[in-house]
Image 1 (cartoon, rainbow, N blue to C red):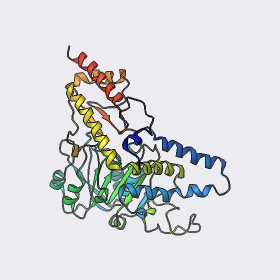
Image 2: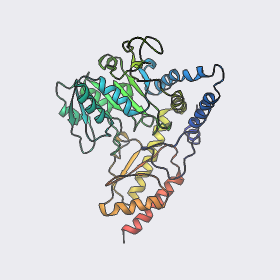
Image 3: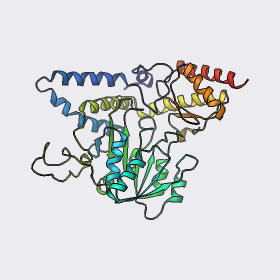
Image 4: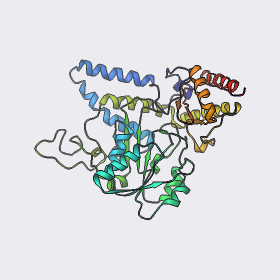
Length: 374
């Protein structure tokens, strides 16, 4: 087992990096894994390709250990958006979802509705940028067959109450875009019927990595419409006919994935399992609290949730409109990497957010306060 401090030392990101909600700097174990797998492919020694072909099963084990889903209910996806496309094109009935969350689910749902015609959409009105069990219950009609939510909203940083939503929607399918909270929240993901996530953010496995996990019920109700030659029971390369998709979650893929990407993702998840998600989630939460406290100290409004139960690693600052430029400039001048939007600044912390990084934030806020208080 790794301690949380030992885990944090396995990364090399520079002080001042607070942009994990956009992309996480790669774990050292991920870089080492990719180098090893690339070297296998570079030399292609006799029998070496067999190891590459085993990465799919390795990934299923790694995702299962983190999510609680059965290995056979998990399939690799190159990113969250592709996984959601697979789901939405196979979904039938009426889907309840929000327009205001990250648009991957909305785009997939609209494209599927227009192309296939078997899915109708009902748009959720959120509760001041947050989806709650109560707001969903108020808008839940009898003909809704599935509900799609983000585990953590990319703009507000709000962590949804999956247990509450599950209680409200009953036996309807619950589809979760988990990317902004995957591996940094203590959440029972098996409350959902479908979980999709990429690995480039909090997992820190780089682009081109991700997974789709389904419950037994979801597997029976979602058709593998976007299903390729590698997703049948007729052998690795079926010829002469186009056989039906296999009956398991393996059907939800179009072509053979990159085993090197699978290896990167697996290596990151295996290390996370070794340190434990509870330890990671607590360190991330503690660092978010420290960031919020700094903002409070200098009177910078925080619009993201303050309660530990309602947030993950995202802290959103919303200074007055005429002060936003000054805050952004101060962050830039002090070497703090964040995401800036029209009316806010999003800081996202991780286990590797050090006191040195927080000192840079403090210096930034001091400079900002000295300018705006004149």
